[in-house]
Image (cartoon, rainbow, N blue to C red):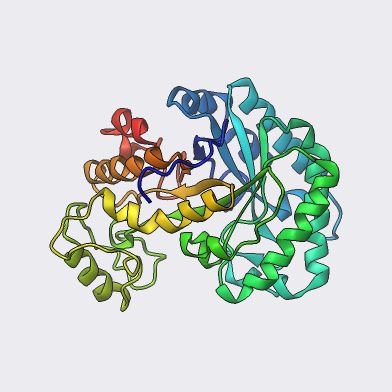
Length: 349
């Protein structure tokens, strides 16, 4: 991969997610929507050196149970856009949950990828979003759907992508449109995405490797003990053995070409990301890492090492990104768990 530089995604190069505000939130009250994130928070994010925020949103924010669009949801999002713009931040609207699918809610996965009626609801929502917010094309981007799960959805998902872009472009001809591959936006599935001729397209992926470090003690991760803790500095052999011990397979290392006795360093991220960087460069597409981060269970000084190391690869190749997440949800950069290293950490976002 050498020193391959991607084309610059101006305005969306360094950001932070606003998870828990309009998506993955149990509280759907007016008070929550109006107070969870304020201009004070957005000003802090700007002070940290960010140029944008990524805002996860859900279908239910905009559509009621009878299928009618709710003006209140669009108003909340427009206010978030205006507040972000007031603070000098661009914003990505990232659709997380639709009728028939949600990566974080198995009960909601009721056939979206094989049901044309559910897909039509998806297109209609994006048309409505595009018609409402396409006027902000210089500062607002659209991310079609986050974390498509199973690889078996790939063909259907690609067809949905193509149709979505056509429907959106009628209302928002200049807005940046972002989409990623299956296996939860894995960097390994970006090559399966359609190579559209549209110039305002960004491929996205999420990155949280190695999981034994970034998700240590995460109770929602199958195979991960809640009391498990791990420092960052280990050899490749130690990482591989621990990965197999916890998960029963060597996930996250099959495309890494390093001696087992080497210490895991920036070369790990180079090896993991070299294919996706090459694909984006060959297809002349922007590349965007929409989520990356370390769970609060990790020692903050060890987490700092991880952020500093992955940042080397992001900076080297000009990979745009947004850290997960601003506050709460076990990853919040603004939370007390990161207080002792936050001033240093934000240098490596």
